Length: 134
Image (cartoon, rainbow, N blue to C red; front, top):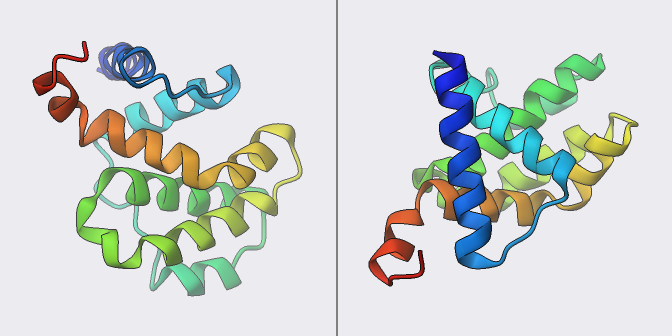
């Protein structure tokens, strides 16, 4: 099933790029596809007990990645978190920044843009289609 999710999200991300002109560097685009595909069936992705406490509890790069991923997923996919969006984005940016690789430094630097891209790809795509932008 993971392959089906991966190909579906790859197509959605590609369509969003073509419809909007929003560009992501290839390594970030691939990361977004994998993040979305692996998160579809995950019902236990929110940090416990809170985003801030999870941030202060980071001990490893894996902890930071999991928190950053949760923040990127929530801030991009779930409109119900709009009132907390800046807070969640700040936590995610900080989590990714603590991992010193090019990918995670880029995700930290462009977190808001990537989150907005995911929002358009997942939540607003049907609105773009109504405007005949496809």
